[in-house]
Amino acid sequence: MKQNKGVSDLRDDAVKAGLGVPGADNAQQVVVPIRDDMPLEQSPEELRRSEFRSALEDPKRKISAMLANEAPPQEYLIDQILPAGEPTFLVGTGGSGKSLMALTAAAHVATGQNFARWKIPTPRRVLVVNFEDTVEQVWRRMRNIVCTMAKVDSVEKMSNTAEPSKWRCNLMSNFEVLSLRHLGFSLDDNVLHDEIARFAAESRGFDWVVLDPLAHIVPAGVDVNLQAGATEVHRHIGRMVRELGAAVTVVHHASKAGASTRQGEDRGALAASGSHLLTDLSRNVWRVAPYSGKDIRAAGLDPAEKYSGLTIPKNNFGETVFDPEYFRKAAGGAPDWTPTESRPGRSDADRILDALGGAELTSTAWDKAAQDELGVGRRPVAKLREELLSNGKIERFRDPDHASAGAPAWLYRRVTEA
Image (tube, rainbow, N blue to C red; front, side, top):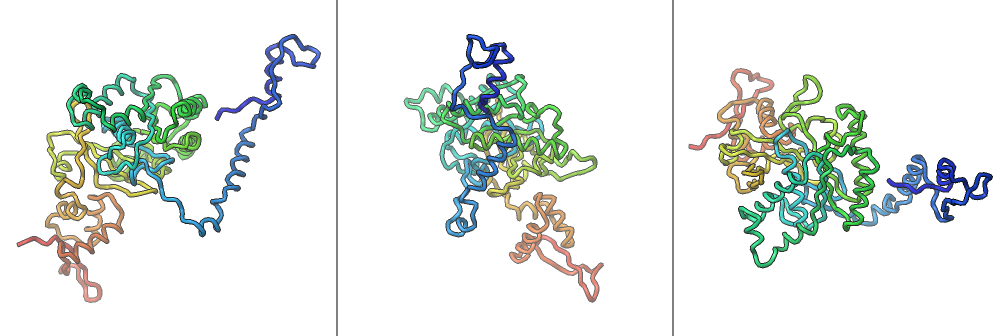
């Protein structure tokens, strides 16, 4: 945050420059302009104290106010998955489509067009700051994305229409891209924070800022694999959220599915690792991952094509999404969304039944297999097991090899249709 110099600082600068100070023995003809209305500079400690006292003065924090009024509803830039004014991490392995996903989501938010299965309540102002790609690289990707959104194979065809569509006008009005490749900025750089804030003030503000990727702006000496380093990264992101009054999404390279930065630890296919500490501290996480032929066939898609899927494994503001929203990585990188609701056999129940086949399993083994398939905890799959049992999709019977008079053991298996 930029701070004005106080009177004493200006006097010190004058002395160092050899200009003298009016009224002093060494005064010269050159006078440093000092105004009475200049605010004295606050030290970091004074600034934090002021912010603490401002929080104390907030009338909304009073229990009486909370009981007397309904809490304001959560505001979203993308319904349920992108809360306004909050930080989000978008993670994925190399080549999974993280940057493409970020650009596509940003274009949809800017235009107001729904993003896959999720609604965009209203068009918003978006800034994408790229620290890895050149403007030309982003340029090519954006043309492909816009063509896909317009359902044409070239921008020229879209431009031949008599009048630009409303969503195209929104895109041109609301979408900004900035390339800062190889310029040496980092998250703790006051210049980066100040200049983005200045640009926002001169550009009608931004509702969503995307920083891509984190690896290029980690402060010097900070290790994101350590608690202190991950906490510092979150602190700088939180600072940008406060200064801009905007949602801030950071694109981050994650280790391969299930891998962890902790030696010998496997966190499962849906774990957002690399560094997992960053996502553990985050309240909202998007994950992009490539999907194999088996998953693609189960989704009713063409296994010859390349697909990535978007899940929301952690969300303190809306819905968590474990059933991927697939997109085809078409020529030129344009994303071709395949809405989940139009795909056959993608309910959690069907996924579990297909995965288990005709196996006969104990409740513990059944729950473990279902957890591995869905990537969720024990309680959801235990509840789903009881629902399938009551609906006649699976059946329960005594295990003859392990049953005892006092505590009969049970096995579960899929009910096959005659």
